[in-house]
Length: 308
Ligand SMILES: NC(=O)c1ccc[n+]([C@@H]2O[C@H](COP(=O)([O-])OP(=O)(O)OC[C@H]3O[C@@H](n4cnc5c(N)ncnc54)[C@H](OP(=O)(O)O)[C@@H]3O)[C@@H](O)[C@H]2O)c1
Image 1 (cartoon, rainbow, N blue to C red):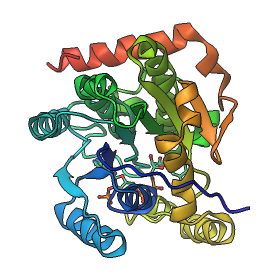
Image 2 (tube, rainbow, N blue to C red):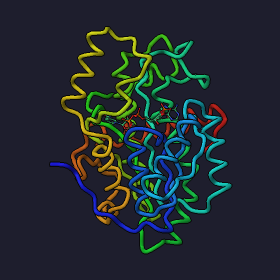
Image 3 (cartoon, helix red, strand yellow):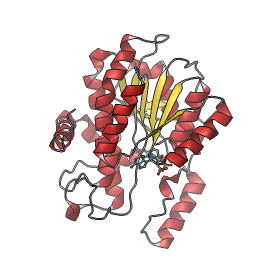
Image 4 (cartoon, rainbow, N blue to C red):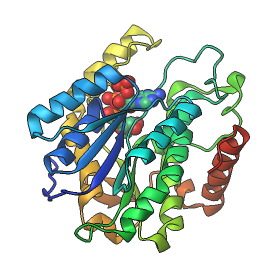
């Protein structure tokens, strides 16, 4: 059954979506623009972002703002946040959508900040961005538009099922696990981050959720840097074509959680196919693991000179 979301008038609401020039993020941005929100798409490639904004404007009549965001460095992430805060007073919906499934090691195995790349892009930089944007989200809760509950949505993945929290390789190029594991581990962190955010923000009237978009035929499985055997790549291509959701269908759960009254009634939940589902990994229920991840994330950032 195709997924559907009820349209809502989002006029006056401010939305920020990371990595929205293609795939699930692009279709999420398109739907929210269609409903009248002021959307910013934060992307690493200016040309691709402008093309996406033009495409969205053509199909909805509402052009999103474009902002430059490279999540593989903490400095560029922090710069993006400063620029966003300088331009905006409020943030009603934050969607941490950008994600990397990196198949190639960066030159020395780690980013220039010294972290494994999927960890930094998928979790740590989004952690920094989210915490630093909280004052704008808090402002939105104190100045609600049409009773709308401000929210944070993290695009995770069922890959978290196979994930585990392993700090041993995050700053050690010699210890980096197989590509799927690094991705799965970072997606487990997404779920833990959403759960803890939900707890921490309870008294502020902000909700936070993590979603699984489904298996979606986006670009994430078609990156040119694959160093996998050809038979695996073509096998994966076949599997994607035969079974995957379209990007529009992949965006439905994000949009549902971003706008529905339903999603404002709870916090820290895991959503799949527009419904609350069980956490994909039992360690998400273990508060000591979740709290440790939060504390370590703060510590990693502080060690690099980024207070949160
Ligand atoms: N597709 C699936 O089946 C599936 C399943 C579960 C979860 N997800 C999650 O869904 C989210 C969206 O993925 P998608 O499937 O739509 O993939 P996609 O088409 O590859 O889009 C990923 C987006 O993230 C951006 N991005 C990657 N690295 C970045 C960086 N260093 N700085 C800033 N932006 C960066 C990409 O920018 P560029 O265009 O410049 O590369 C792109 O805009 C991801 O979080 C992914 O983990 C996807």
